[in-house]
Amino acid sequence: MRTDLPGDSTPSHAQRPLSGQDVRTLALASLGGALEFYDFIIFVFFTGVIGQLFFPPDTPEWLRQLQAFGLFAAGYLARPLGGIVMAHFGDRGGRKRMFTLSVFLMSVPTLLIGLLPTYATAGYVAPLALLVLRMLQGAAVGGEVPGAWVFVSEHVPERRVGLACGTLTAGLTFGILLGSLVATAVNQVYTPAQVRDFGWRLPFLVGGVFGFFAVFLRRWLAETPVFEEMRRRKALVRELPLKVVLRGQRTGVGVSMLLTWVLTAGIVVVILMTPALMQKLHGLAPALTLRANTLATLSLTVSCIGFGLAVDRFGLGGVLAVGCLSLVGGTYALYLGVDARPESLVALSMLAGGGVGVVGVVPAVMVRAFPSEVRFSGLSFSYNVAYAVFGGLTPLVVTLLTELTPRAPAHYVAGVGAVGLAVAAFLLRAGPARFGALDASS
Image 1 (cartoon, rainbow, N blue to C red):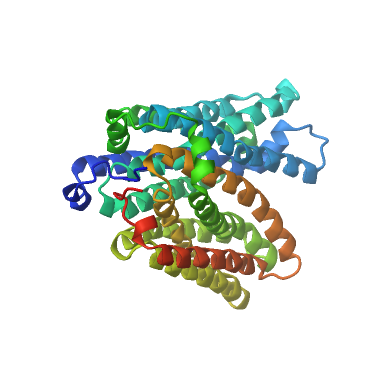
Image 2: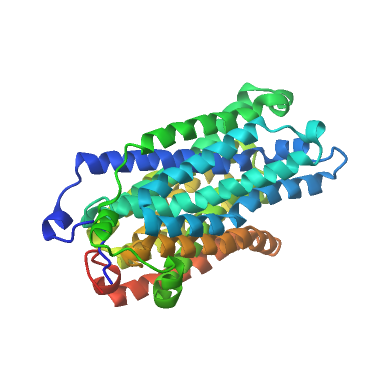
């Protein structure tokens, strides 16, 4: 079974520089990914207001918050189903169709969330409608993330796959940063009462509109050369792609799931949970932790590209090992350093964010883990199922462990970082024949 990724296995294609078409593809794909991830993540910045507006006013505060975060989590639970379905059609009918459909499916529910009636107007219909829309968002992002990695990696020359995956991942993380900045702006421009009245709707309405703009831009993207070549040779998988993956690609599934665990540890613990943990553990002001988190996310975005470039220059195993060590070291420096010197929060957050940039290596491994015929399905299944499990359990585990020791978040990241190092050792032993050259055949 062929595992070629760049679309043309000739040496001239593998060694050619990035073309203008490649750059445009990367730019449009990253922009669309940023807007789609913004649409998915903006919910978390307004869970407090949403909890007040979409549930009965006599609901206890703790239960209201739990219900609001439950709605947020529903998006994660829907990711595997959406990702598997879209990947099935992506392997059978074309990458571009699903790549465009995913951003459309995100834009519609995002826009509708901004228009939803609240509990005061519609009663229990309001939270039920919000639940359905969140699940649609989750299904969309479940197809978007793995689909985007596959799409860009199959467009660029082999020696630039690391850069392509790192740049696309940077676009996704920029969506988190964009959500944070928009939420901050809304809360600064409007009073708390105005935010409850109408301000919370604005980020969703803007996200929906720009999502449709991303749909329009993606119409200009071409199908990947890899898929076109498979279609020309009539080499498309004839049976259920997921069945092929589960039957013959267990190593790829295992490696991809373990690396997704590393990815969730970095994003969920260091980026998403740390601001609240710093407020709780050290009594730091929310404004300070938010500013530190914004700069950490910016550092992460830049670092993703750097790690992608390093993969193209030095190979997967070594760069993954260095990245995991950077993630662990940066996280310990953050949690130990702020404990000793709280005023160092901003600088140490940027250092930790740079370590999280190892997530830019993860897709470069995963796109190599599966043959082209079932690449979308294999990557989507592995990534989405693992993210649903680890993304859902990580906040609970870290919160419980933090009751035992304030250094628990760093210890958790260190444990998962050790898993990443084990995968790096496996990649180094396997060599280019298994996870290296993308134009190999097997």
